[in-house]
Image 1 (cartoon, one colour):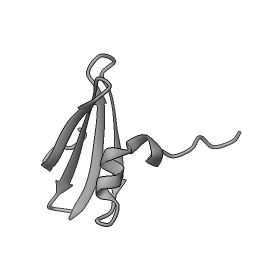
Image 2 (spheres, rainbow, N blue to C red):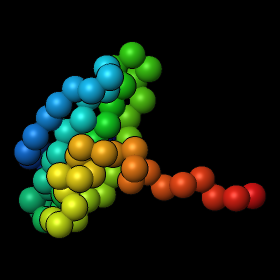
Image 3 (tube, rainbow, N blue to C red):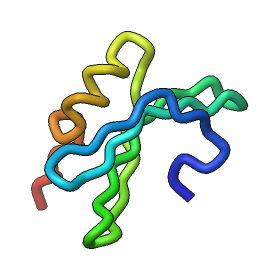
Image 4 (cartoon, rainbow, N blue to C red):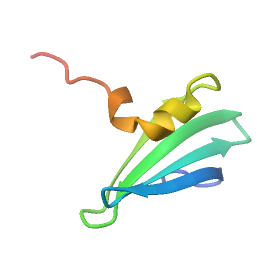
Length: 69
């Protein structure tokens, strides 16, 4: 599951979405989890130490662009 066994470093709500910055100690990995409680959609974005807060505050800017068919 998203964010399982991870330490929550920060959390916020924006536009009805729940956004959290998490750190998984076993992998020394940072990531941002965005969840919509209404639709139950959840996605996870990787973050680096140098951009973790930017990903946290602007997660949609870091989503992969759809690939052309």
